[in-house]
Length: 72
Image (cartoon, rainbow, N blue to C red):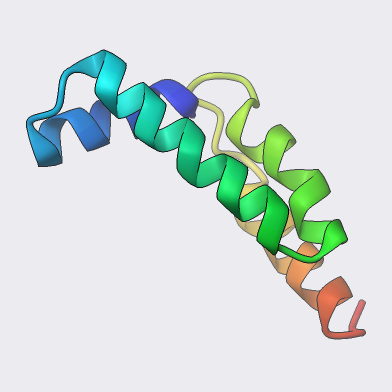
């Protein structure tokens, strides 16, 4: 998924792949700092998961948000 994000930033902005990678890493780092712990801890697994595997991402995100708001 990380490569997909980098490619998307490259396509949309015209930045080089290296610049796009730096931008994506910066945003991910910022999110890890600012998100509540349950969401921040799951960010690496969502972003760093198997390439092309989106199975369960919505489920994981819904679960994490539910935990944030006290719902299961």
